[in-house]
Amino acid sequence: MCGRYLLLNGKKVLATFALLRDLESTGQAFEELPRYNASPLQRMPVFAVRNDSLAAEQMRWGLVPHWSKDGKVAFSTFNAKSETLDQSKLYGTYFKGSRCLIPADGFYEWKKAAVTKEVRGAQRQVIEKQPMCIRMKDESPFMFAGLFSVWKDPEGRELPSFTIITTVPNELVGEIHDRMPVILHEKNFEEWLDRNIKDTASLKKLLLPYPAKEMKAYRVSTVVSSSRNDVPECVKPLEKE
Image 1 (tube, rainbow, N blue to C red):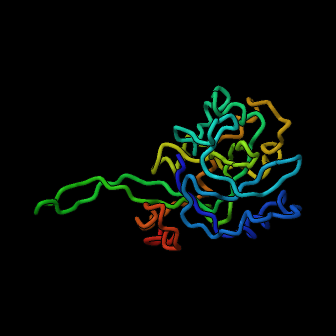
Image 2: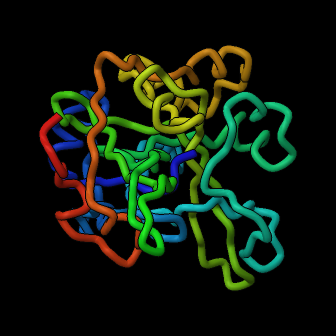
Image 3: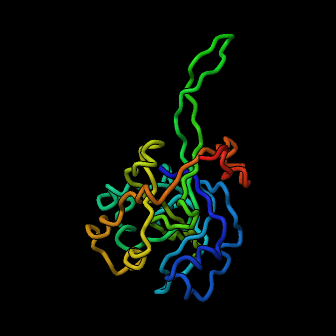
């Protein structure tokens, strides 16, 4: 599962990855950064091939299928399981031809921990959810693997939207949660974005847990637990790890 993430600097994203350095324009894709606590239904920058060229644009988090009658979905579509994409009635079509990259600087998961607290005058163990921020060790940006859709209203106005693909966790994230977002290696970007590639068996081989040795996780304030809080405190470590 991936229900919150952060993205701080669009210029840094463009400078980090060779594939993006030739983009002529990113329009308004990065105008609302930094985002310290992005959550579903919000609009975030996405890279995708549209009209035969790579473009950066804002899309809404939570995929709305192009065939939706009213531009709404009755269930959660902000994550898609990598293991079942090719069999999915919802995601199968987009897996074959509408793949995208979602830039991020980190993501959040909540770790269950037993803590001792005073309850009605007695010391008791209770289970709390401690938010954790997961980033690259060097805090460089990375790319989630995603799928996108473009829904159109009766007047032809577009609503582009996306979902983040998840997989089993690596050793680091596995201590926190039983799923993690798929983070693609830069060498696989072009293959992932190529809409002419329909070989889902080959594409599924890219959807693996990112190496734990290149990542870090640290505790952050519970201020991040509310999607209304989009402030630097969300990403600030509570203590040195």
